[in-house]
Image (tube, rainbow, N blue to C red; front, top):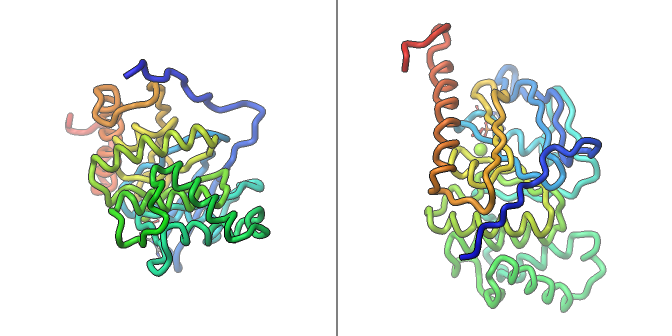
Length: 274
Ligand code: ADP
Ligand code: MG
């Protein structure tokens, strides 16, 4: 291997509008379930932000709000005129369409794809499949692919939407560690090449440190930003490296404190030395 690429992504670019900005966003479900409490957060253009928190803390709620699938109860969300694509834990491909057909369908609904011919869309789908290392698989049906391959198709479909902002909701949560590592590498490469802004949700601390320029820690009930950790480690990183493990352990400690605080709301002040 050659030396790792040492470029650190530019941090907050003063004078630049962020790609996504949430300002004191709250979300109440029903009458009183406060899922998000005044969350203020931004993702700069080209930045990779990981949102980390325990299950049920409001991560999916936050992504849905950014995607415009739901409305905040209070606060403001500004995505400017960014095109947004979303990826979920389940790839949600149409089983009756081929892999290529799934991507062609996404191409058809983009503004630039609307006036293209079927042949052009098929060629473009083949290019996108090359990007996610699935060249030659266009004629397969989703059920013929492994879980990791299906997530790659979902990624190609997200790219077909010509998005500037990619929202990812635990997209690799169901994959084995080796497949996940591969997809981390591929996602990182595509993010750089396309200068995407990514908001990536996970409850996996190492995954967050592996991928993020910044890790934003969300507390539970209500979901609130409790701390942000810039990740200044050179890329590409390895999930099992000592540097990633060290920062992950710091973040895990912080997360644990938060979980304990939540479990024992009466306990305050200095802890028992744990
Ligand atoms: P996460 O993605 O971090 O696991 P969610 O955003 O899915 O968390 O959920 C946050 C909280 O909001 C949970 O308590 C969940 O039960 C609740 N919740 C999520 N979606 C809805 C909904 N559509 N209606 C009512 N409650 C919801
Ligand atoms: Mg979720």
